[in-house]
Length: 280
Image (tube, rainbow, N blue to C red; front, side, top):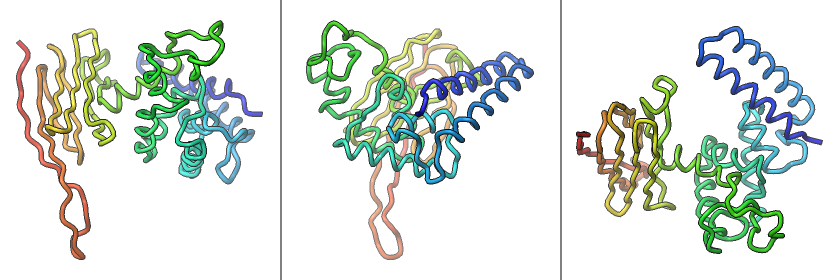
């Protein structure tokens, strides 16, 4: 039987590698890398099959195996397909709990299924985040069925399922830190514009000040505001990239479909322009 504890052991070891490297302790980084490699190899031998199936065959089993880097690269595509089929088999719903939900959106998004991630994000039928909102929730419940489950074991302000907001901030709004400029001194801004979410406004209070990401699809306008004494690398569709300084930067991003013909296949074309209002 698959042990989720082994997966989290591997995850902690991998994060220890990153931390050791960040504080320039190469011997510790090597020690934890060896530990991670040992755990991952044992997990693969025990739970991962040659056809890409994972013991227990649950969404969480596949998500955890992929997110932690344990999944052999040649089998990741098959595992993602299995997750997608399972989501669809449950009426386009997740079946994850506390330990699998934090991995869900990142795994789908990083493996070509952002469409499914957005579908789950905006769903309002049980079980989903939107279901809680539809039922009047203003904070995340401890259980997906917080409205019908036993109230004696249900918190109405519980972080676990709220872990989805890490993906919403970092991937949808595009606000992320950069290891080269820790503490949000230098940011990476890479929003994901999806028709499923035509309006978006996110604010993050960093140590340097408030970072704002705002997308208005109807006006083709994306605005990013970063505080004084910070810089950011902005990555827009088609990998248009530029480095910006503090202040508000507004981009006009227009997407249209180029007419199709036998000589020119259909594809999206973007047009960009930018206005800058520096911090005072």
